Figure 1: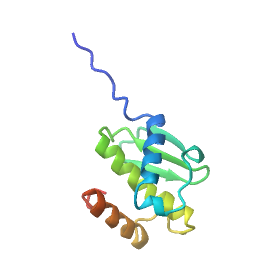
Figure 2 (figure 1 turned 90 degrees about the vertical axis):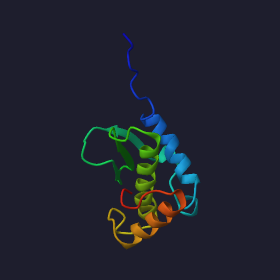
Figure 3 (figure 1 turned 45 degrees about the horizontal axis):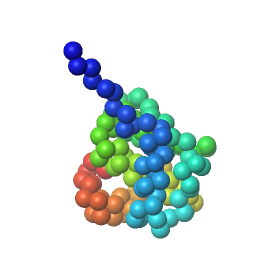
Length: 118
């Protein structure tokens, strides 16, 4: 009997590395993104949302529903928008309004993400 190995891509250590990558790529390399060691990362199990960004203390959580590289990367990019807006002192950093959507469109155009799924 062959045993299936659990997915090891989605770990808090890998989330830190993926965040570091995202922060170094456009458009986030233009924003005052915090260093990865200033943010905690965790894998959550809500089956409701793909990710969260919390401010005090700064924390990014990615749900276990994100089970592929593409889904993890896209969700991290989404959460990075919230981080960038927060670090730029926007009061509506946690909303999906005009400022968020402007950056989201730029990211989706650049990385060929589906804006409807982003």
